[in-house]
Image 1 (cartoon, rainbow, N blue to C red):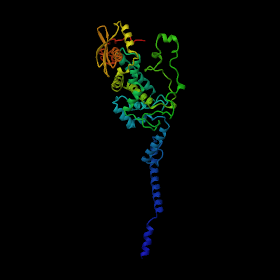
Image 2: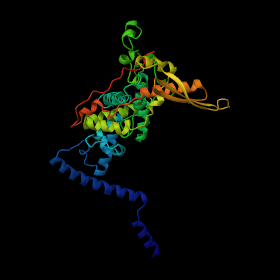
Image 3: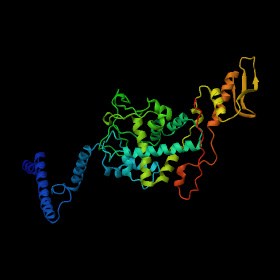
Image 4: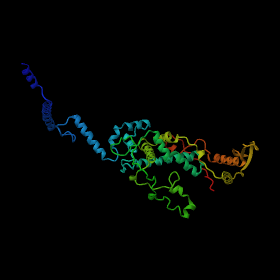
Length: 402
């Protein structure tokens, strides 16, 4: 009796293989029912995409296949597609962190992060925006320097321009904004990362073989007699313009970061207007402190001061001792003043009379060149609504040419 019951019970228990076969049969029957239902629905309505024509796929599988298809499509692009900008958390955070105008879309901000070395298509890289942004940066900076310090020497103007909007400064600004670099450009990269083709290890930053001189007439004497070639053939910082290297060779991270900052300003100008672009420039560029007095470097300040006084029809400068202490001690201190008639031009202290005189002459030259008029106005202020009538800015004769 026990044996019969045991045999009957064992016959009802299926082996693993039998259970798997039964499960497959049930799944197959369910799939057939889905197939018949989907065929009826398909006959009534046409498919909307390439994945709805298969009736055997459920919505979850369909979404997975769509994501795989989109990823394969993105791999074909050198930079992220435009529609990927709306789903990037990094890009939205950057837009909010910089307090960018709401009229600047995320798609344009994503374009500013694509360097020309990553995507050679001008419709998707930031080259055109960076060109506009560079012109705005140099325009706003140069008018600020020339109107605030109208007597600055040309070399100091170039040095100040480089300090404000040079590539090192703009790369530092990009780091302060929290912009991260992508390891390599591609369509699958997050649009919120800066994308550029990196230089190969050991590659030169500047390819001298591809550099083309930007001074075709600099060697001719007729050009040297009329105007300096710096005004016509150099860049905004007084350096000779050099031809850019091939984009396939890559660019340094500093150059890509600087190009991105320029492109952001150009994008703001196009989407939000001139006032928004200038306000952004003042908040992020002009607000940086720069001690212009440290940019001067006079080799012979006493001689330069004498030439300056002769040009301005001042009396010849004379050095006079104002005070001294410890002349015969180990550490003497002399205070010397430079006078032009009854007017004191400068004052300096040193361990010797010669050193004190040189420092006094240097102080007099800085006091002259760092002159700044009251109520400084720049030409771009006339673009604002309700601006007062323009008053011509003070223009000095320029530096003393030795």
